[in-house]
Length: 163
Image (cartoon, rainbow, N blue to C red; front, side, top):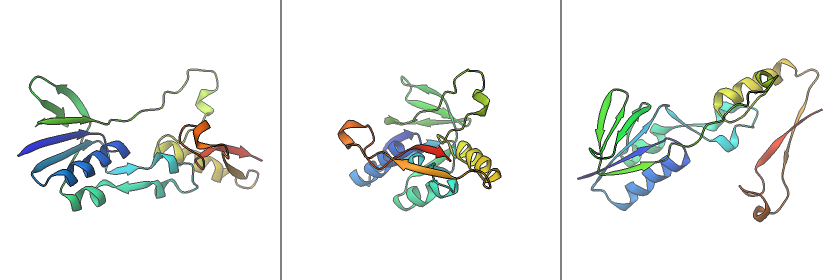
C-alpha cells in the first residue's frame, strides 16, 4: 500500500488529504501539522477568532487520514523520510503544503501593530479592541471591485477603519 505524506494542515494540506482519500482506498495517508486545528485565515478578521478554527480530527478522522501533530524537522528526499516530532515517517509520495507565515517589519513602533494572520494575532487584536470598546467601534469593509482586479476575489475583508 502506498503511503502519501502531506506536510501542512491548512487549506491546501487538508484538501490534498481529501483528494487523495477520494482517489483510492488503497492509500495510506498521513498529514503532519503542528496544531490540532485548521485555521480559516480568511475569517480571522471576525469578532470571535475561535470561530475560525476547525478541528483537524473532524475532517481527517472520517476519511481515515492519520494526523501527526508535530513540526517537520527535516526531509530526506533520497531516503523518502520526513522527520517530525522525533518520528521518522517514510513516504512514497510527498505533498508540501506548509503555507506561509507573516514577517513583521523591523520598524519603530512595529510592536504596536496588529495582524489577523494567526489565531493568536486575531485574539490579541480582539482583546485590544475589547479594552477600548467604549471609545472605539470597528467597521469592517469589503472590497467591491471586480474579482478579476483583486487577488482573492470580491467579498473578502480588506481591513478595518477605527472611528
